[in-house]
Structure formats: structure tokens, C-alpha cells
Image 1 (cartoon, rainbow, N blue to C red):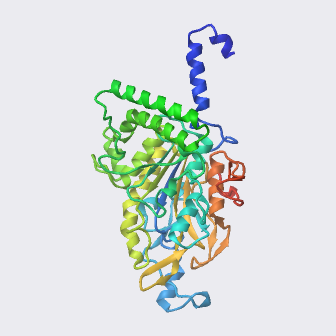
Image 2: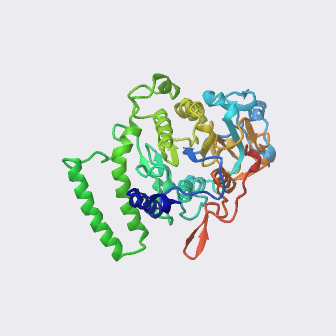
Image 3: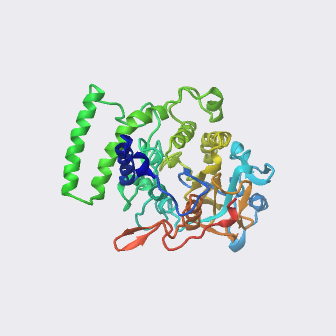
Length: 442
């Protein structure tokens, strides 16, 4: 049909060129295994380990036992939460006052209270929640998603990480590892220059085109001498993306046309270029422009949620993100984007129900909480059950591999078939495990 319509037309060569270019690009949009309920992901990561018993899995008995001087099973000491918990929304999900604004979004949240990871140290657990592996370097979940789906906008990175500070593991958190380098995350920081060196340095646009054209000729010549080099392919693609970003990224980062009501929703002041509200609003603008996977990291590898000394340090950290994340959910919902955008809210592990020192809590990977919203998951659901103290999972455990399998399923992927051959075997995000938690799917 295309041949009969266009063969005699001057349009044929242009259409053919575009089709071939799209086919040749590793970032061209791709169809998943089946129609997914989500087209994109906003992945919110709290570095350091948010306490589940002080947020989305409250345990009143902790306070009762502490007041009465009682201990839990095996003589373990317990410590109550300084934040009260209440049933929220029509669904009645119990959420503490640590997140008062998010608590008002309870009917949009699918809270998973029975998350379990494979390691109790920050570095390994951070790798686990991002890559599925706590022992070896592996591609991040964002890299797997963009490898499977490609991107809808060739002028922007397919995978963006908004991280003012470096988390545990550094850039490995968003690395593509053995996947082609084009699927690595592009880090953007807050401040007056979120993307360094984005502005054109050449004296004119014409001069820049000439310089880039010459550079591209040398790159292609070098590529012919070294065929199949994935790092070289990634480097060439990065120059192409950078050129496109010069035209597109400034518009995405320009918040001047956002209404006062929208800024207020995110808890932002006009002109601000930092803060978690800025990160959330930029994330919304990114997905509107076709970015497939956006990760938001609130703090880095220090001064984070690692509340060994005092659980009260959760208070100011939660205050910084509570209103912006609730605003993001409301904004996505109001624009009709939440239905096909999967919002993920997680940490690397929880905190111990018992005290560490006087007022702190230790690392705890055997049970912790995360939540999902939009993108085909049920809202107003609390999945899984832990014991009266938050020590043990009683029913419906959700391992990190299950969590990843469910995210991929929402995007239209059979997690066992989204693979890449490396070093003689087929690898996948979920290693050799994982099940889709179908009970939480809408």
C-alpha cells in the first residue's frame, strides 16, 4: 500500500528515510509483549531506609508494649512510633501522620506491606531494589524498561534521574551495565544549571552544525573500523541526543508558564530551581514529553533516612517530600496521566520495630513497605500482612523480584522473556525468580 501510494511521489524517499532511521535507532519505540496498562514510570526512591512501622504499616502494639515494659517474641524489645496512625480515605488504609498529605491520597495508593529484600546493608540493598541483584553489577530497572520500550522522544534521554546528591552505589543505580549504553540513565541535578554544558558554545548555530557534522564523519569512520562496539555506539548516540536536548530540554526545565495553582500543588515558590517539588514537577513535564522512565532520589548517601540515632529524623525528611509527591499524584490524575503512568514509591529496606540505642531504629530487610499508584494497579489497597509488631511477614510476601516482575507486567512485559544475552547466558531483571502480584492489578 505504501509503495503504491508513494512510489511515484517525492515523499517516498523522505518517508523511507524516516522509517529506516527509526528502525536503525536502538531508542525507537518498541511494542511490549502484550498491551500494558502503563506506558511510563516515575520511580521515587528514598535513600537510607524508611521505617515501615512509622509510615505505611503502623503497629499500635509497639507503643503499648513499650509503655508496659513488655517484650515481643524471643524477648525482643520494641519501640512505639512517635506518629499517630489513622484510617484514611474511603478505603480505610492506616497511614501515620508522618505523611499527612500522602495520607489524603490513600484511595489512589496500592500499599505493599510485605516487601522483602536479600540484604541488610545499604550498598547491596540499594543495588537490589534497583537491579534485582545484591552481589553483582546488573542493569537498573530503568535501563530494562527503556531497553524493552525505547523512547517516544529522540530529543530527550529515554531514562532520566533527578538526583541532587549521589546515592549509595553512585551511578550504578542508573547504569545499563551490560545492556547497550544508550539505556543508561541521564542524571539531572537541581539548581540554575540542571544539565551542565547544555548551552551552545559555538558562536552560531550554523557553526555548531558544521562542527558536529565533522565530528560525526570521524565517529562513523571510526565505527566502521570497530564494528559492533556497544560503547562506541552509545557515545555516538549520546552526541545525537545532546544536540536534540539543546532544543528540547530548556523548554522542559522552564517552569515559568506553570500556573500559581500548579506550583502551590507541589509546594513550590515561583522561580525555584531546587527542592523535591521541583523534581516532581520536572518529572511530570518529562513524561509529558515522552521520557519513558524518570527516577526521583530525594537525598544521597548521608543525612538520609538511616535513622540509627533517632527515628525523629524521619520528620523533616518526610516534610520535604510529602506535599510534592501528593501534588504529583493529584496533578497526574487531573491531567489524565495517572491511568497510564505507574508511580513507584520505595526504599531499599525498612527499619527495625525494636530500638537501636535509645531512640533509633536499625536496618530491616525482612519486612518493609512500598507503594504503587496508577498504571493499572488497584487504588485503596493494602496488600500483605505482617505480625502485630512488623517483625515477620504473615501472608502475601512480595520479594523484590516480585516487585520488579509486577512493574514490568504493568508495562506489557513477561519478565521471564525480557532478556539480554551476555557472557553466554540470557539475563533478566528478575534473575531466575519473581512472580507477578496479580492480586493488586486493576
